[in-house]
Amino acid sequence: MSRAKSAQLFKDAQALIPGGVNSPARAWGSVGGEPIFFKKASGSRVWDADDNELIDYVCSWGPMILGHTNPIVIEAAIDAARMGTSFGAPTELEVEMARRVVDAVPSIEVVRFVSSGTEATMSALRLARAKTGRNKILKFDGGYHGHEDALLVAAGSGLANQGIASSSGVHPDYAAATIVADYNNIESVRVLLEANKGEVAAVIVEPIGGNMGVVTPEPGFLEGLRDLTTEHGTLLIFDEVISGFRVALGGAQSVYGIAPDITCLGKIVGGGFPVGAYGASAEIMSIVSPLGPMYQAGTLSGNPVAMAAGIATLDELAKPGVYEGLQAKTDKLADGVLDVFGKAGVPAVVNRACGLMTVFFTNNAVTDMTSASATDRDAFGKFFHGMVDNGVYLPPSQFEAWFVSTAHTDADIELTLERVEKSLHS
Image (tube, rainbow, N blue to C red; front, top):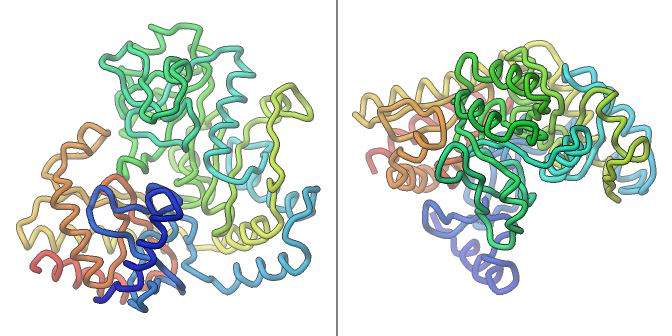
């Protein structure tokens, strides 16, 4: 499989763009090699700059839940663009989109659109601080919530320690105001909230972990978070940028029956265009400017093209049987991978949720960042390259989710499994 044009484009990009990529997630730092450059996509397939065709399980890191270039979404976006790509003023599409979000997501009564998931989480934290009058934030080891300073923090050396900056350029005061607990360990949260009593504005969590690979909440974990945050007067923020509209129309909170105080959304809600959102009760959202003192603004917020694409996407997802079908596809792929690995004698665990899965090379359960980090990442790197060489595009990191779309057919999955077997023996 020749990638000569991709190689040349990457060489050119490195002279013009930091590391040759506009997001570190696109670099192949953890698997080695050089990233592929793509030029077109359709349904479950992508084509690179050298015209190689691959089955795609990155799906633009989640937004393409209906597959690439879905004709209904594309037509909606084109129609909106013809009317004007941006006004910097309110449009009817914003109202229509807001109505769909409020109707779908149980905890949201009022929603504000922004232009990225990072903006959504950043704004949610500011809102939590404004609401509570507190400054500290609790996050989880392995949880990524965008590149906002307070969230680029790694775990400290003990349960009661403050976080330390995991990126150069983060002001130490931001890191000091962030404390880090262990996902799926409710006792670690209890200890930290007690040690920082009356100081924690919010606990922010992915209700289904997606940035240490897929890690689902163990029974009682989310319920424990809800109880502890209520007890301590701390707001609970669900980062559903990945899980929102993917695991169910109402997100993970509708699956697990837990109502957070604030919800962050992104990816699918824009139908493939840059968008984010945060929402809460009308009472909490009344603090947001222009109603209240918490300022947040954005010139391209509620962009009409993104709103139109998002509306079209959510309307398709609201049709009967969509999520049942997506779960069936995910299970077929996950079970098939486990079967191939088992026959080959390769130790593997596959964590999954509707439309999401991650293959870990280990015999042990993966329930948090510590157990995810203990898996065989060298084996994953070799597997990744084998799959790409055999025409299947996977996320170039052990700590990312595979995304399954409604466009993936049974034939796609069967072909993927054939190539899994081939890659293990290559």
